[in-house]
Every structure is written in structure tokens, then in C-alpha cells.
Image (cartoon, rainbow, N blue to C red):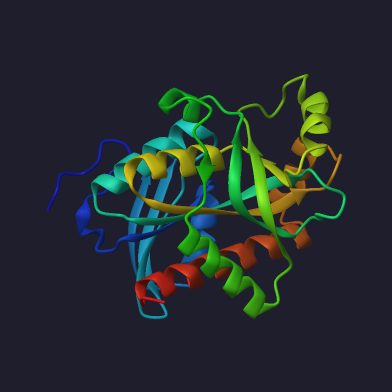
Amino acid sequence: MSSKMPHIRLDDSIGTKLAILPGDPGRVERIAGHFTDITDYGMAREYRSIAGNYKGTRILAISTGMGGPSAAIAVEELKKIGVEWMIRIGSSGSLKEDVHVGDLVLVTGAIRDDGTSRGYIEPEFPAIADYTLLSLLKEKAEKAGISHYLGICRSHDTMYSDRNPELYRKWSKTPALASDMETATVLTVAMLRGVHAASVLNTVSGFQSDVPTSVGKYADEEKLSMMGEENEIIIALEALKGVGNGR
């Protein structure tokens, strides 16, 4: 058994190579509703961790908090205790009129407009989702009849910047579908460390809407947002189960 990691406070006794990574610690509690035989590892900083069986496959659920730095630490320390497959499930703002609240974006790649991923490697290096995980996520979403899009997102570091309206307008004119704060970091660090990673984003803020207000509605369990969250949990768990079963 390895020693516990300094931030996530887990070691290789978790007994799995599969992890689902929500940002919000509260989302871990909702993931737990899909598990049996749960081991509760408690809370360390922003990292809320449980492991359990999902249809016979053991999976770790661990929150990463908000932003790239804490997400990068999670990826790094999970890798060190043997986790090889990770799916981020997060929330996002829409950059397109036809991507509505509750729709999922299965991220093919991320625009690295964040600071953390650039701290690792030059911005020319791409942040791309693992093909196997992305294919499984698409398959599971289609099978369940879940509304989803396949495309790129823009990851950034600022929720309340005065420049946000200008930046949203700029990026909405590109093929980018959604905006979040962690995907670019998760995909970049995972690629550099030899980890398979993907990201599913639940749209909680509609096109040209006020993001903080929309996130507030999400926190109050606004119906479409919560439906999207449940859908992203389901397809992420199903995809990880597919990896665990070799398919």
C-alpha cells in the first residue's frame, strides 16, 4: 500500500483504476445514489471522495473543486495511486443558441484559455479527450436517448471578470460549444501523465445569459439543469463500467 496523497488523502487501497470527477462536492453525494457497497473517504480540502460498486464495477467518485489548480492536483495524485481512467462531469455555459440548458456537451477538445494548463506546457499543445472514453460516452448517450452535442469547449479562469461578455461574444463566433473552468486542465495533465481522460459538460447557463445567475438557479436544483446533471452522471458511470468490462 502506498502512503496517502497529501491533498486528496487517498492511497491505492481504493481498489480501482476508474474515477468520475465532478467539480462540486455535493455532486459526489448524488453519485453515491448509484453505488452499492460504498466506502466513504470523507472530505479533504475540496476533495470529497467515495468509492462503490456500479453494476459490479468499482468506481471512485472524487470532487475537484473549482478551477484548474485543484483539478490538476486531483489528476496528478490519482495517477500516483493507480487511477488510469478519469471522466470529468461538470457544468458549463452555452456558446451556441441551439445548445440549451440541460443539454450535454461531450468534449472532443478544449481551448486552453486557462492558466494551469499553460503552466504545464506551451499553449500549442492540444487538450484532447481520450478516444475510447469519448466513444463510450457517445454510445451511452445515444442508447439512453440523452440530448447531447460533440464538440470543443473553452476553459477559462474567471467567473466575474468585466471582460466576460466580450470574451463570450468572441468565442461564440467560433465552433466552441460551451465554456467551463476545468476541462482544459484535466485533459492536458492527463495526456502528459499517460492517463485516459474525458469530459462531459452539463449546460446550466443558456446562450448569452448571465452565468452567475444561471449557476445560482442550478444550485437551487432548477429542473433542466438537474436533469442534465443526472444524465451526465449516468453516461459517465456507464462509460467507466464499459472500460472495466473491457468494452
